[in-house]
Image (tube, rainbow, N blue to C red; front, side, top):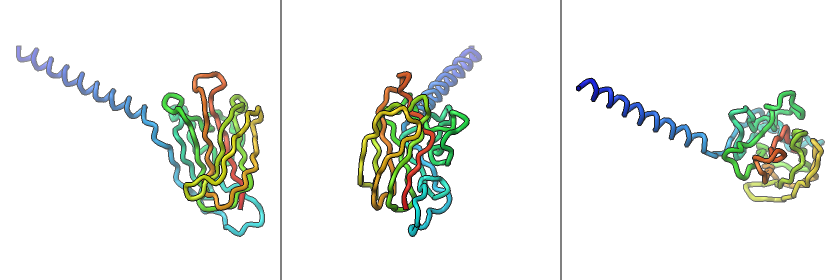
Length: 192
């Protein structure tokens, strides 16, 4: 009799532990906290004679994104790694379609700069989409433009912004549509 009570208690405790563990895992997977990368390298000097790609990770830029498909290694850092056409489809930023309803990605430049243009490299399978492109300075929006739908995999936007320290892309999407996926290979932010 005592042995049966002991086994029953062990089963109840194991079931409770399993339930708590499952609830914690579900809570962890459902979080939509922003993904952030640390800056690396040093920012280019302000007195430049030519425009440079301020968004390259070696220029002390860093990324903040609404989410990423971490199960498939689609980390946001891939958009500032300098590889415009990656050999592996995993080397692209892809938001988490299970939890992210309004995906966005920000490239923080590490310093204020005068921007001239932004180039976005899309995965060819998912390039036809609209999104909003903004430059910010000190947390306030300086200029916003809508990227028109195109089948091009490389799109350059003239975006003249003085004193900008961040470029942000905001997307609308249907994550379960065959053409609804967002896959960004690279973002280049040109300026001085």
